Length: 312
Image (cartoon, rainbow, N blue to C red):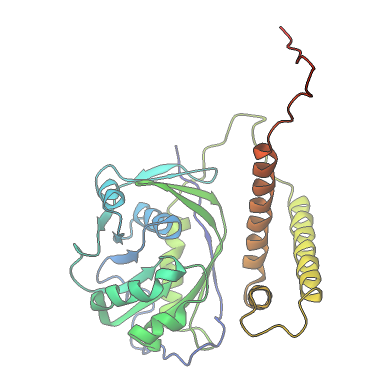
């Protein structure tokens, strides 16, 4: 089946977290990263999706992952992208960290947040002197990356599309979303513009997804979609306001309730779109948990002395 358009990209200013230095003006804004393949470190939901779309768009890619079976499938039969947005299979270069050799000008880091420090330590020898690491991760991990490789070689990003790692060689691409990218200092730079051009390849080289049978899917009216999204944002803001109002009084600095509220407040300030998606996932998990509790309840036993009836 034909592949659908990849995640949308928006070039945006990152929050002023560190004073990072940008590349020199002499560097080409379009091709400074093209001297070697793009290295995608982490082949899960985010990294695998990005790597597959870039490779399908003709960008040289090397995927690194710790799961040997996932690496083998990616470089032999191909990484399979499936789901409502796109369905295709893409063979691409892949290696485990132990197998990887050489240095790269651009590394897209896509491991889970808790593995950031270890991954930064492993990838550091493979980053060229003027190279850059882009944090395509959930969470704010740029400080950890900068501590290992330097702030001047670190670029921040916010990924807002949905995906899931299903099994070695298979990734579900759940819905389109934005990739926002920017320097850790204020303002745009030539390398951020270059990275934007690079990631736009995820859209420019893809065909529109094949239409489904009539009646199975219809495009949502834009006004209805806008109303639904606005209603969702209002609901999220109301829930957070209620949670903050119910915060415990005189709670300590490491009180778990307050830590959660502080995290939600930061998400609301830094990335409202990410917060909306996060809350949607939380609501889904709560519904699934409640459904599981209902199913787990034992059935009532018939009263003593009565004979249960069975319908034939």
